[in-house]
Image (cartoon, rainbow over all chains, first blue to last red; front, side, top):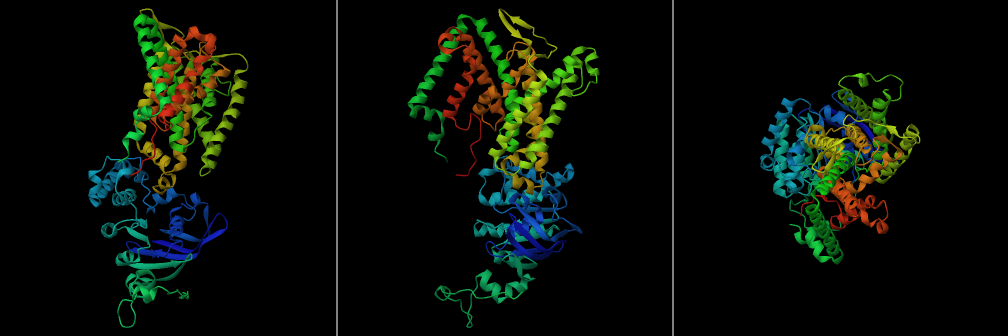
Length: 265
Length: 358
């Protein structure tokens, strides 16, 4: 289980981005972390995966506990070795390498050849598209294929926790659905998933539990079903606006709407 | 699809009159060489073998540049000093018969056959060079990860100066002899003399390039290319970027050292000795690296051979014109060829322009 407690992250020694964030990812569950731009979702991810240093950030308070040991000051490579792998925002595939070579970079920490071959076979099962394009240069894949490659690459390290940062970013609705089904598949294989998304509808449709963050804090959390039913969540994140009579509000009414809601937590 | 006509070097030639003129000069030179070869084949063959020998040395040094650049995106200006340090280590081991930096007698020089002892001594010297590369990387390059690449490149220039102080101190003003088992002899093909050093350089370069070719397809090699492309994404895959840097620097230092050994032998130098000029080999190689493309292994090979060919042929066939050209003109030729190459292909003959989906 991943346990993030009271995490505080500062960039460049001055910019406070996370202000005491806490969340939990139980084993074999899908947990969604939602929030608008600049809420600190990606920073949370970096703190978990040990990539804050690249961005001049550091954890100043709080802990990240994974399987009983604190990892907030571990190196990225050790964190991957311990079973947490991430799919970065914007896919970040190695465009000059072939699809196969990209997958092999994902298996870097996996020194056992048999388990590497296993992971490779599983990735090919999950993404038949990649099989056809195994030896082509990854930079020439389509956006959807690149996202699949990014997820396949992350799966090559045989993770216990997979963190996905905006996997739906820039993809057509049909592809978003495909990616969603793949996430469910991966979860069914026993991998816990932390899903960071702006597409709240997609994330909450598959998650077991959800967190909503704003300004570097969790402002609301609960079972995904409860969040989906929550009026504020519907209004702010799911884009469902209904008035008392149950009809959809017209855009005319929303236009001058100014958000006044303050979270009480 | 990209517009192919604008990227093709040929179309570029036709559009630009100055490039047309350059192409005409190159064609004229080629015709001239063919005529000379037909007229006096043995002189041409001798020059050709010499040019391959020189090209192989350039290719070896260029490969060191490329390895470090591909992993760290930094042009290592300290390559020349590393080459000389490597040559010095060999000189310590073989000619003085001491382990570098100690007075312990190197037991390998007393071995028989002596060439085997020489070969093992060189391996030890290369190991010392690798350790030097590792130390430099750990102390000066690793702390600069994430800093602007220009700063790191200038830092390597500082390293070059720093190492030169030690190198020059070790050489003083005399030559330090560096004996090789094949000696300064050679063999004759007809009337053409071919030094064994040329052959040794060619074989070594061939082995080095094949080794690097396979290395880039290995687990560590792929990791190295991934780090070169996107450091953060590579870290996210669990690749230990520090270790990749260390391996690149160790390999770069070893290649520099190998190049340094050959830089003391014909055709680069006639003396078979380490001297202050030995460290200039890296700067003489820069045109080959730039021409081939900084991030391309085959570019290092082809660039090295082209530059070697141009330099030797110019030296052979334009030697009657020293009144106009000046005595040291063959050393300028590589830079002229580099400039011509860059005009046609700004990222080098084999350098990768950025891959983008269009």
